[in-house]
Length: 549
Image 1 (cartoon, rainbow, N blue to C red):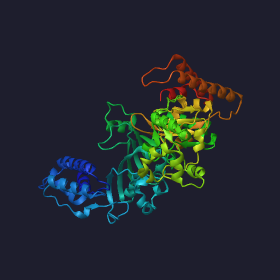
Image 2 (image 1 turned 90 degrees about the vertical axis):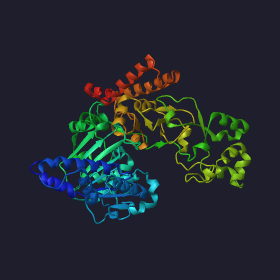
Image 3 (image 1 turned 180 degrees about the vertical axis):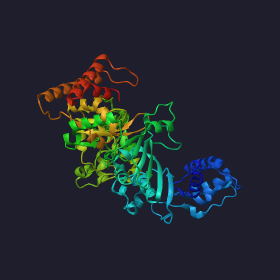
Image 4 (image 1 turned 135 degrees about the vertical axis):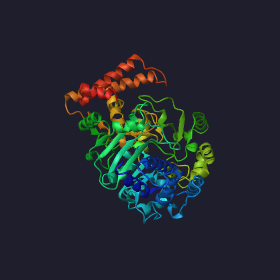
């Protein structure tokens, strides 16, 4: 450092830094503080008349190095005012603080940056549909990507030949469908560090698990992965990152879902995958999500209202069906019905009204139902996902699945929680549906082994929860649906019986929030897990990995 102090100081003095989504300027302030601190510490290697002060270095950074842009003009004005208040003599150039979207407004096109650090905004695809056509050149434009994926790609394009970028973004891009384009982009654009922060305390104002991704413009010597979600509470994050970062092989990168478990876990998941067949193939792709009404306050009613409508007009009973939200779904068990759905799908009215006017038929034949929904007509009419009439639900090709026995699972869960529902219950969009009444599949999904695979490949949320999407469910490796030999047939029969038995036991002794399972249930689940381990041919050390993860 002493030998190269002048070079280091000159590089820091001439660096071109940008935050392409600055918002309140927190990252700008943090970086400036760190840069000033380093330059001050270099002072012991210099002798000269020019004072090396915090104010001087901060002013030089603001005037010569700092470039900022954001979609919010007010945010930039506040940032400039704060800098001016703290350093009154600083000269702030409007050409360095530009209002607009870096994605579409040709901002800083004549500047290449040595360092970009940013926490870009998070917006679902439909929330910026008005500019999607202008983003066609991005890798992420092929998918239903969150807008932060586009910001990442744009930032890398703005780097100098020796530049680097650091992103504080959601960690869902690693595993979610919408992150496929960004994962594909990273195959060719040299990430150097990927840190999954997981359960690390969130920054103020954020509501999702985060990741930090560092990218170099020039090829780097490999990628390091840090699973900060496993950090012990008493270990400082920088220390943990230094000790636990591990290299990733290039073969682990693809547009497919990324999963970076520890080596032994990764190897075991790969073995289980090899011995199974994706659930989508086993079920002929009959995996769906629950119903999206577009206006739950109108179409979802309580049991009292449901009883009243049916009592007053029995003809409406066919349109009142049991309805469950994802959070109500338990392993092997559905609680008593607390909500009902007014279920009139697209086409229902036209099939029944014959030559009558649609609403006239509805009001005359189902006046109690029509009067309830009329309270919400204005809101219901504005839905983009209604049927032929505002009182109908959106079209859906698999409504008939809900009329049959089926396996349903909650989307947000700590472990897989599947139940076989025999009636005609419908569920909301926070649930997954499998068109199957197979107790073997039910028991297999609820086993420890399948839960282990699920947690290894699915998107983590806060507080040890995970996200179960139909696409995640479709990839779970199933073995024994069609037995290959007599031994597998025996195991299938045994696991099927466990599924039936556990369903009965949970029905007789429903789970409570803090209650303990009875001895028979615990023993049956233990025997089920042993049978599943035999089905997949796991060794005792491999079983130990599953049991402890």
